[in-house]
Length: 223
Length: 223
DNA sequence: CCTTGTGAAGGGGTTCACAGCA
DNA sequence: TGCTGTGAACCCCTTCACAAGG
Image (tube, rainbow over all chains, first blue to last red; front, top):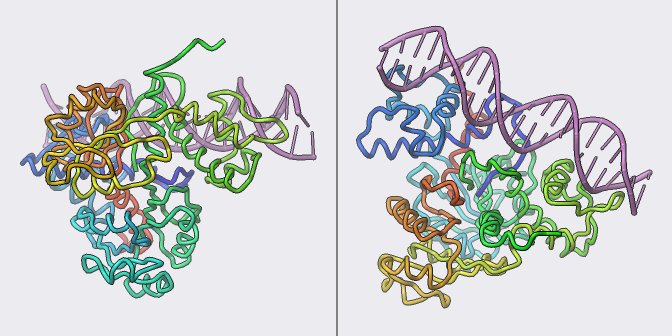
């Protein structure tokens, strides 16, 4: 679950394309782990449920990475995608909200290997949470603005209760944060140059029940 | 983050529309909490960053819920949407994978109020996890098939390691599960009649860095 | 022969704009 | 006057199909 719903990009590359690139990367990593050096758009598509044409078209926005008659060199393509997405550097992230969810996020081991370093966390009651978790210092909310600068944060992860989320996000935006991963159950309002991705399992479930309902009971014939 | 990427629905209503309905519901709930009884498509759109035209068009797939010149009765619209999405009943969900992430999911208090009842959980090492958490019994993986039937499960939540996810999902599909909320970092392969939503914070982050990169360094002029 | 890269065609969702009605 | 509901226009992404090339 995610995405900013929005209109968006007047400029060149469709956002949907950008959002597929990480998917391709992951499939390529898997292939690499299996010792596969070359893959066709067909082969890659099979792993993802995407058509070969779409994959080729997506790549074509950025350059020519394949070899006719052969396909794509997995290692090379992977490094190109990594470069395109800006994943060759380390990004500093900050967590806001160290409740039950926030602690789970700090503990999640999946971010670091991908270059996302959790640098600092904030909470209204920092002393309740402990002084630090996994070497991540936990500061009070009043220190937010200063610390974002001091720690050179580029990405914020929001895990505060719904009612506090928008004010927190407003503060982040004021601090020039341009990328927000939002776990709070609301649709944040941000300026067009700020990117938001929402993690919302409840929304995800609620959109599936529509289809489940169709199955079990089309019910009585109306009228 | 979520969604099954896919092609999809030949039939009537676009999947994007279905996925927006829960969003509308949440905004309406908020409005209701604020004591607002009537809202226009314009007003509702302001809360969500959606155009009024889109909202009206979305609703028009299902009926006529508004009153010209006034707008929509919040309470009525909400109950209609709830009905459309099949949220008036309780859905039984099962969790597969009771590791760090799985325990956080069991502990998450956001599902139950929306009618999603966590009924049972499974793990390869059930005894390690405790016999039950929050009254949710934890069974071994070998009991999966039987228990899904016994507990009348309609929705599965997958929180196992990536390498085990596809096999687990295959088993769920064989058991006639048609809705899966997947937390494992992969794109599951399922038949067209099975609905999957992926929760994947890393993908979400990786698609935002593309835009961050543009900001900081368009870098040197290539060639 | 096989697979890429891509212009063109196609499809589907969004936006427009207005008739209809309270 | 105000706002809904909706056919039509528009736009953008996806798919097609083929020239190009190893």
